[in-house]
Length: 186
Image 1 (tube, rainbow, N blue to C red):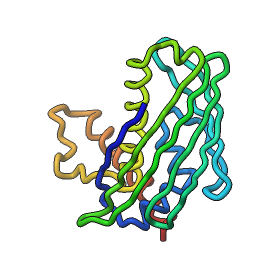
Image 2: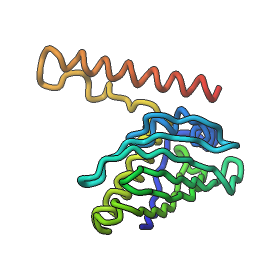
Image 3: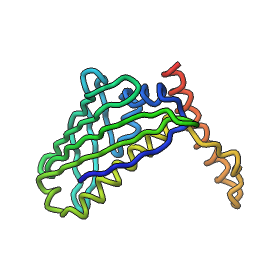
């Protein structure tokens, strides 16, 4: 399964680059990631729990960063084994380009599966792989950009009571992420 897409991230290229090399950021971005350790130089080890159709599995695997051109591009290559469920492997070529208002992140993803997962059929697998890639890059964009300015919509959701508290808690949690990441790159 192959997929190509891009998105504009409202952050300078050096911040986007630093984030894509950070295991804590990657852990937040990979859907179902329970553990992530390692470094950009040596590669990362990850544990991911996912359900694909009727098959739920815990994948243990590695992610390697290669073909790195500082601040411009790299290749993420990963492989995970899910026991009886089978395996998943793939990669993404990521390119960063400075644009007005931030950084254009372009990616080409290629994914393959085997074992019981492959028996689900290409429609299920392709849809799942696309969803995972989209979710990863959406999560990545949200982590790098920090919370969007929710003040424009305001806490008034038409309901009184719990909604403002929920909104405030969500904003507070988002500010912690932004503050944490800003501290990281400063």
